[in-house]
Image (cartoon, protein in one colour):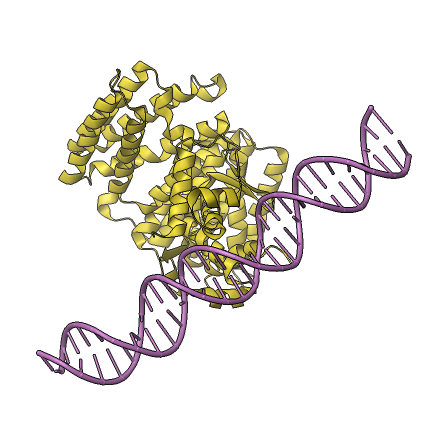
Length: 218
Length: 218
DNA sequence: GCCTCGTAGTTTGCATGCAATCCGTGGAAC
DNA sequence: GTTCCACGGATTGCATGCAAACTACGAGGC
């Protein structure tokens, strides 16, 4: 038997990120305990942690609910990513070793396959690989604080699952960006790498949220 | 009796941020439970949450220790602040209402008093007010994701308590920056506001970490 | 003398039980 | 008909107890 608490945290996080619960769904402790096959104690710990991560809202004596986000919240998430991820990518450009480059390249190609339109298209797989790709970049940038800052924010379900919202053009651009990031890292060009990442996130934001309101576009 | 878990979280966080435990100190559950006057269950929840916040390190079956940070970790924290806080300040410039400006102004003046060299100098008070000042700016910027991203990173004890490491010049600059931020907000000038915040954080980083290594200074 | 293994003591991990709190329903008063 | 209050059921919050895991220490073997 693996650690009950860990199972609860992972299982619950996956369930929420996987979209099994709609936003605002009530999360009863006993219900979750049965579903996850553990007692209430690890469930409580899991809820507690996920509340810090922002995945669930917790109110005293009233239980837990799956967190909900407004369009403004999502926009703010992209704002944070835009502030942090290009920097991480720039740092990665001077730090990535052969192993890192090989893995990122592998992921970029795998995403081509998973994302190619047609019956074999597998967006869930794509979401997974995309998460790995970005996580690897942050790891390579070797700044723990950066990872922490992003962690609290990025796994907003909608943001992570955003490929489901892409049109064909946006998707094609996104896949191309991954390859271009690898190219920029190979060239050890921090500025190029950061630019690609900014484009990548801008593309994602537009695909998900549409054109920005005039006052903010400035 | 107030909520035991909340008391545990707050009490433990304050103890760590207040420097009562040296980094790496072992945190036994029973010991903390007695110290905080609650049972082990809320202590466990508190440790769990603070681990997500990055204040303690938790390893299975081996207990909790107060997290430690290397100079590189601290530098990364400033990197993240540098990426996020100027943006928050810029947004605040177009959003701050009279109440916000009055409160920020009040804090800036209070910090002058608490920081003025002499027997009445109270750096702990200053630390507190500084935290309020920055928190208010983030609140005014009205981007929850930004607050979340910073929260996971900023209350590194050393970063928060950094006034203790300031020399007289750095301290004077820091206090002046607060007033200048208020002025920039009053002028509704996002670029000016962001610049002041960048200076402010740069000053803090230099005071705390000294000159940056050449390769990173670029 | 150094390493390996075994064992006692301590600490964490988890389940369960009980008290406190909250929510919904029904009835009475206005 | 509407509002308020009371009460039952359900749920969370916390304390405690027991089993599993880890650490430390000492004896035996190499």
